[in-house]
Length: 302
Image (cartoon, one colour):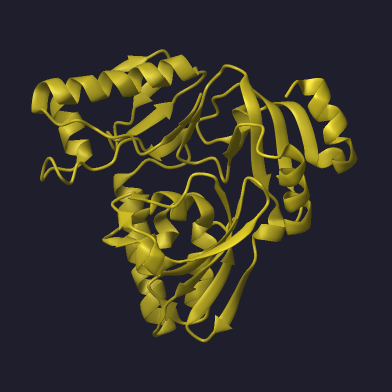
């Protein structure tokens, strides 16, 4: 739809709808252009109404914490949706089951589980982003993934219909699953194992210490750029990059992290084209050197 049509259609939704929103500050790379519409959903009722008004006539992109996302500098002729703090609640359904809003930070879910003496969530303390994003890509580290603790997902499709999906109905793979693309995750239920609080906290501290030792922090990065090629090589992707590409390789302000070669960094004012060139260059060089075809882990909006 044309912008004027959308303004008229969405007029009653107030300040939660922003036109020509700059997306640069909405992601960890600090890269990106503007979107035709940016909608911050205050609650489920408002989100249902918004989607029914759109009637699936616009491209939709859901953004969480903005980690693991690279956004084009060009105008996005569609709708970007972000869920508000009302989707950031956690509670105990029973002593070993947690219900979490999809906008909850992964680290906060890990903390909540620890405070309730539930193990199995420790790895989440080292994953940036939100629960919704983690489910979407089956995020994981230290040998654990979202699929290991997930019981069910509550979601809404782009037409405003609510749906619940048990985890046993989902086919999970490494950093992937077959959940339909036209769903916005609202909440999820997770199962943990009762354990000792100090034991859980000790494991979290161990994981965080190892992460900080091996991965860059407090910089403009999107985390892991490529998935580990588990079906093509026994080596980690960072090892293949190290073998194939000079670590000082850069395009403008888009650099490879000297601490972890699968982390790409915006060291100043990198553009989308700079970062995309670096990603494509590294992918090509790894294939030339090793024959391994890399698959991107980050989401690209263009």
